[in-house]
Length: 419
Image (tube, rainbow, N blue to C red; front, side, top):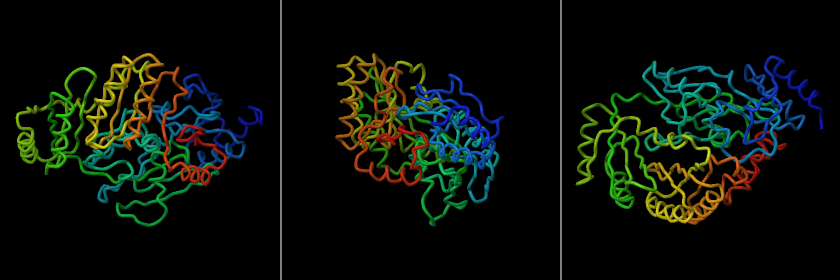
């Protein structure tokens, strides 16, 4: 094992002494405090640092805005925190081709501000866009209600550059929306939690900003009735952009629909919606209802926050199971579920009750082909597995990890199955 002084000297050679510092308490990742924080100035420095760390068998934890560092399992070891903060430029906005090339350290909001100058946007509504970076967004595969209309991040990304642990800068994809050649590295890197390589830049397809937008909200007496409304809406000819259901242990469930079009088009859509809802009354609502997912994270020190997935037709049954489990464990809960069946759940309570509730609900979801992934839990539950049953895909995931990061340099132990 190399001495700390020797490691520091080699890392300084890679990125320069001005770009390397000792880690502070605030740089900890899930309770693990690294020795150093490196902030490379460009892709070449970043790749050089990775190669150096890989040769020394030093574990590297990539960090963007730091908003999702507690997602996944705690790292087996954390020696260097690799920040992409200085890779923060929008490199090219080919607005006529509806594409943009952006560095990984750019915040999502900064990118949106640049795109808006030409009346365009990245059709993704992530958590904390003013702090969340492009690299972190892709690594965690974080997207919200807009995926109903525009697809997930894997549908929006068309090119990526990855710094691999051996120092290679690998690029895949292109700058045009229609690209069929080559290995699909963009989709592989999306959602990999930085375990295969460090994203340094990405190319996205972008969409025009809407002429107008209107949100309609309505409530129902029960989740069963609400689910009937949602399924009816999804089977209709309505061209809505987003649809979510907000529910909690107490109170009626509420649904929110987003229409984006011309004012005349929106009015026609709203009229059709009111016909579909029948006696259920819909009202125009403020845009703030679309912050419901992010609001679940407020004062969450004693909470478990999880991403759940289930067939849209099973949401009401899943909520019934959740209510039974929460009643036994005496846990209040809140949930925001998209029409796609993907949702965010918050449970509050004592650690032992939270652990039991997560285990029971995860078992029920997995039995129905769904999943529960823990995004946040109290420090006392750090050992609680974030991912659940990996299924039969784990051998393939391990093979890809072995191919791209055979020494386990990047984020060791944080992903599914201890990858």
